[in-house]
Image (cartoon, rainbow, N blue to C red; front, side, top):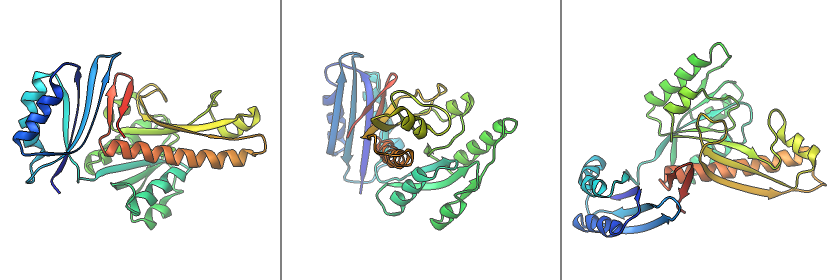
Length: 282
C-alpha cells in the first residue's frame, strides 16, 4: 500500500490546511485520516495526515516536494512511510514484565514494530529473548564503566538502525550525553504515585502509606530525571485489603499497558512536541 503519514507543527495562521490539501491534490493523494489541534496558549497548530498515493513514492522526494509549503508556514514537518515498521532496542534490568509484554505484542502482531535487540546489565532475560529469536546483549555496568557501556549502547543503535530505544524498567540513570544523543527517540516507564515514592521497593512503600490509587507514566527521556514530556498515563484503584504483593502485581500490569500505548503512539507518528508537553493524536 502506498500509504504515508505527514506530521507538522507551526505558528497558527489561516491557510495551513488549505495548503496541505492543495499539495496532496497535486499528487492525486487521498486523505485516509486527518487530525488537527490549535493550541490557544502557545498559538501553535499541529496536524497529522495519513494519506494514500496512486503510486509508490520516495519519502525524501515527498519531503522535497513539500518543502515550499513548510517554508511558507515555518513548519516543522516530517513525512513517513506508513508501512515501514520501526526498529526498537529494549533496555531492561531485572524486572521483566514490560519486556515480556512488548515481546508478546510484537510477536503476535499487536504492535507494528521490529525488535532489533535487547540490552541488559544482567543476564536474567537471555533465555526469554532467545525464545523469541531476539538478539540479547549483556552489557554490565559499574560507575567506572558507565561511559564505555553507554557507548556500546549507542553503537548498537547506530549499527542496528534503531528508531526508538525503550527503557522497559531499566534501572540505570542515563548520562546527559546519552540523553542528548537519544533525544526524541527514547521512552521511559515508571510508577506514578501520590505521594511520590522513590528508591527501592516503591510498591511496598505505597502499601505502608495506604495509597488508594497507583499508576504509571511513560515519557520521553531527558537529562532531567523522570521529567521528560509525558506521553501516556493510567491509574488503578487499590484498597486496604491488598497486600504489597498485590499492589506490585497491579502496578506491573499498568506499567506494561501504559508503555505499550506510548510505544504504539510513537511508532505510528501520533506524538508532536508542544514545548514541555505533547500532543498525542488518537
